[in-house]
Length: 239
Image (cartoon, rainbow, N blue to C red; front, side, top):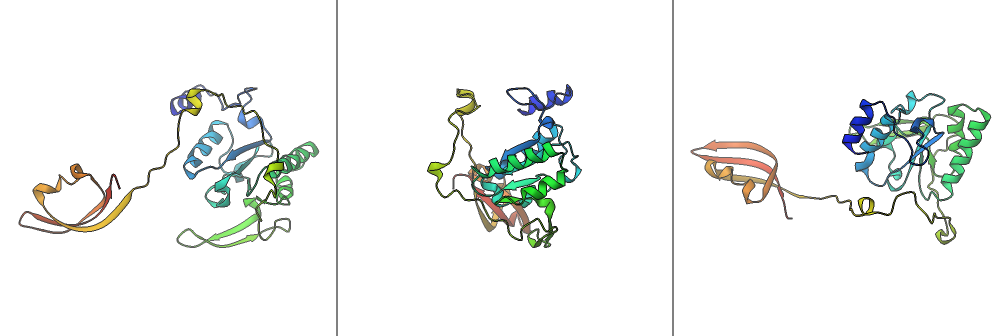
C-alpha cells in the first residue's frame, strides 16, 4: 500500500493481508519476497511490520512465518541477513518448490523452526543466515563466514536450471492487466560528480546553482578581498 494507506491501516489496526482470501500476512507458513533492486529493501521491512511479523529473524516465534527471499539481489544477501530467514540464490523455478515442500512437511510434523531451517540449507542455493557466523571488517566488508552447525554447507552454490525452456512458468498472474498497474517505469538516475577547486567572486557564488550545478559539499579554503577559494564536489545536472 501507498504511504497514506499504510498510515490509515496502522491507525485502524488493519494488518497487511492477501488479495484473494484477505488473510493477514502473519497467518501464513511462508512469506516470500523478490529482490529485484536494493531500493525495495525498505518496502520489505515496511510490509513485514504492517503484516505483524517481527522484523528481526531472531525475534520470530515458532508460529511466525518463515520469511524467504530470492531474485537478482539475493546474490548479495548480507544487507538483509538480519531480516530474512532463508535466501534462494540462483534459478528459483525448482528451488522454490523444494523449499515449500520442506517447510510444509516440517509444519505438518510439528518440527521446530530451527529444524526446518537446517533442512532448508540442504537445498542447493538456499542460504540460511542463522546457521553461519559472520565477522565484519571495520569498513563493513565480510572478514570471515563460517557455518555454526554440521547441516550448513561451507559454501552455498547457486541453483541452476540447465534448460529454462523445460522449466515451468505461470501463464496467468494475479496482478490486474490495467493502466494503473502497468503504465509506469522504474528509473534510477545516475549523476556525474566533479571534484573542483574554484576561485569565485562572493557576488557570483550564489549564481552557481542557476548555471546548472548542484554542490555535493563545499569547503572554504580562503577568503580575501571579495573572492572565495572553495573546494567542492559538484553535480552536473544534464551530464
